[in-house]
Amino acid sequence: MRVLTLVCLGACLAFVLLTTRPVCAAPSGDLVRAREAFQRGDYATAIPLLSVLLYPTPKLSSRSELSEAHLMLGVSQFETDNADEARAEFDRALRQDAGLQLDPMFVSRKAVDFFEKEKADFKRRAAAEDEKRRLAEERDAYRRALESLIVVEKRPYYVNFIPFGAGQFQNGDNGKGIFFSAAESVTGGVSMLIFGYHAVKYGFGGKVPRDEAGTVRRTQQIQIGAGIACLGLMAWGIVDSLMHYQGDTQRKADESDLPEDFRLRPRPNDNRRPRTHHSLRLVPTIAPGAVGLGLSWGF
Image (cartoon, rainbow, N blue to C red; front, side, top):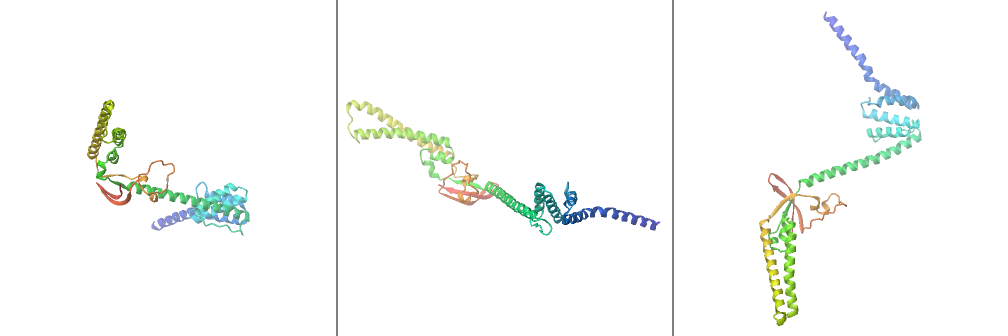
């Protein structure tokens, strides 16, 4: 009984080996037959054999066999006046192995020249794709590095006491800065203009004609009022600036914060005004919950 079981198992194993062996060997055998037909110049026989090995899904596992099959199919297509199909097959072959060469002993000189031309075009396209990929990776790394930077703005305290909205502009309150700048300019300008007019017409400490005394008095009142208004606006601007003053501020950096030499590529359509600073340097930055590299500058 045991002997019979062993015989059955051996017969089953032999059946499996016999039935699976041709299936595994079939692609290599077809490639050998295709190679022989190709070397004989029998392209009509080589084309269907190679097409079955490559399409709709490749039946060859190694890159060397795949590249050889595509190369032979490309030459076969070229020799049968199918240049477009040959070009596509050469491209697929070179993608498997960019160092492929044709032996003029087995193919025509026209086929060799056509392949070399396609090979040169393939290398140019591959170089362009590599450069494009490299630039994309560089831009991505640059963008991620820029996103990790923190801009630290050092705001001098004395700017709060400069009139005409300087403190507001430093604090980022541009609307208030414009208001104080315009209001102080108008009131201060009116006061200085009247003072200058009186100085030129009557001199310092000069006598005013009796018939012009009333007019001069009224203009002096306007001068004094405008001057007081200007001083009041200046005081208001100083107080407002001090109330909103922050010595150091942090924000995410953008490309306009970097010097030209550090920028990845100039943007011809970028109309943003670059920020102007007297000094700019990279410094370690410690923020709540984060440690990174910061940009620091001073006025």
